[in-house]
Amino acid sequence: MYAYNLNREFSDSVYRLEEINFKEFESCTFTNCDFSGCNFIAVTFVDCTFFNCNFNGANINHVAFRTVYFNSCQIKDVNFAMCDKLIFEIHFKKSVLDFSKFYSLKLKSTSFLESSLVAVDFMEADLTNAQFINCDLYRAEFDRANASKADFRTSINFSIDPSRTKINKALFAKAGLKGLLTKHDIIVQ
Image 1 (cartoon, rainbow, N blue to C red):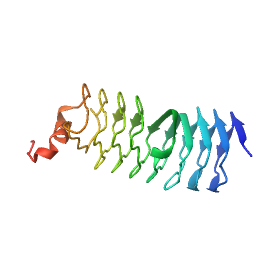
Image 2 (cartoon, one colour):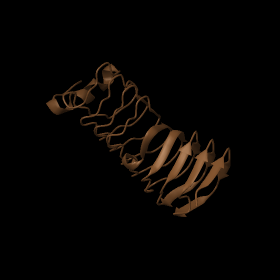
Image 3 (cartoon, one colour):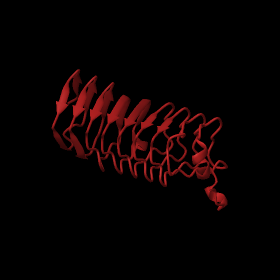
């Protein structure tokens, strides 16, 4: 049975396995919720916000995220690549997304603010106009991605090969230029 939730607030809840499946949430707020044990199926979030929630290792296949904000969330090792791609829009602030996957997703104008993106897979993703503000991108993979007009000026530890990633009009600080030269094995001081 499909359940619809509108303008509801959920807090301090632990969700397990299929408990949240076949539900739609619109304009809902989730605070201090744990989704790490979930195996999502046919779940839709529209105009929702998550505060201090745990998604570590959650299986989010077949989930629709339509204008969803994650603030201070733990989202380690989550594969977003299998999400519903129709009107897919997500934003992150002060969140940990280490080892997560965004392979081949359209992430145009997505904001990653003050977040940890260690070893995140952005391969073949469309990151046009994305904002990486004060993020740690250590070992993040951008192979065959489109990062045109993306803002990397305040982010650290990135390594992007301009011959394998589109970076037309992307913004970089002088201190970050060494992240574009890594493959050349030169020393920048």
